[in-house]
Length: 134
Image (cartoon, rainbow, N blue to C red; front, side, top):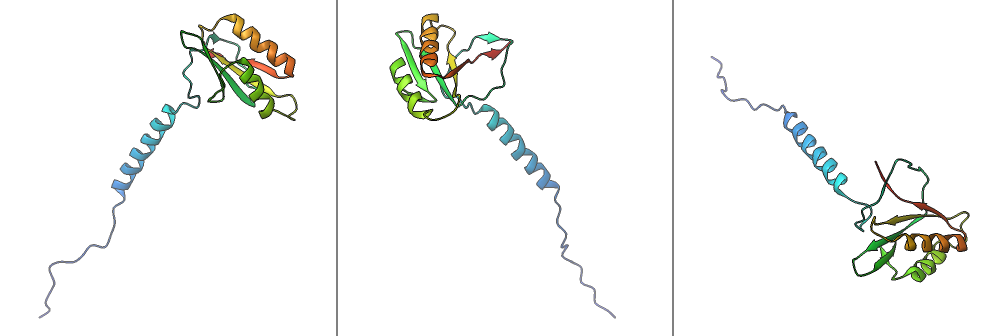
């Protein structure tokens, strides 16, 4: 008479729970990457339906603080329009047709934008005004 063993170990592996984990990880990554803002300076841009696809070599941001304006090249606070000019000259030195994207709050006076345009023209920079889509 043969003796039978009652318990056998099942060596199979179910991957059903792995798909749930992968779905949760994918969902987390999608949410986390959409919350990342490449521009660390919070600005409320004016709206426009004319959006250009040109790539700027660098960005200049003018932020209205209520008691004056703060000037940034990328995320570096440069203090004034002269600081912007010095920083852009060193960053864009020797490049052909350098393009600068200008990001301004809606509340920034037009005089500041015109002064930035004058400085860009004097240095041979192409200036693009950044807007948010309508």
